[in-house]
Image 1 (cartoon, one colour):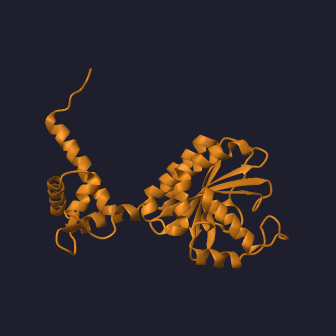
Image 2 (tube, rainbow, N blue to C red):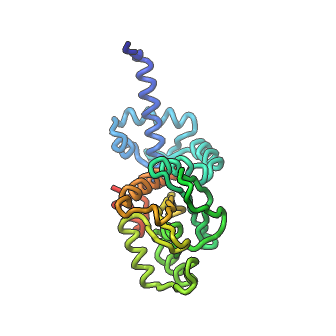
Image 3 (cartoon, rainbow, N blue to C red):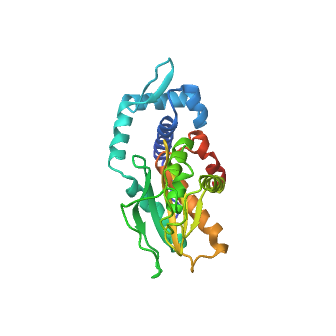
Length: 278
């Protein structure tokens, strides 16, 4: 049996959808927006946008901008958004996307977070696949950004000056103390990572382990990486494209959940990522 909504309910749901879109437009816009700019982005008549803006102004979710006939997010919108953000940490947000990787790949997925103060990577969450042969990841231990996919998936997308300083200060490989850093070679390998959008390493931190990682961004830049850790005996080159595609898709959705806006706000040093994901 087909259920027909009343005209009143249809109008109400349409208004809710439009208000939700309007709030997203204001949240994603740097600075103030004019009525015509909002109308163009929403593909709606200016008169409709004007009515919605004033409904939200009455509740404090929108306020007038600094110049005439412009608008911006109001204090109440900022207060509510701040409450949500303060109660949601990176690890909590990551779980859904990490589970998506595990469901698709049945391999260990690791969340590696960038610790800007010490310029290290740190594993803060692990979800294991069903295979009994796997690597146990140590949580909350600072580790190198230069060696291994869990670090390089972040390092490749850091600003040039920061990246160069980190490479210059790096010691030998954790897997082989005889293997020293060669800055020119590392920079070449990081450039390749930026080009393809993800890192792939073999045995750089753990002998016999293959690592893959895709960077995660928020509005300020690279903050983490979604990673796969796979025993080399189980890794097949023919599956690389499929695994990479899964990581990139989940990392992009994770980044969007953190407020990343893609091409519009990503620094120039991260621009190749968006192209690699299409």
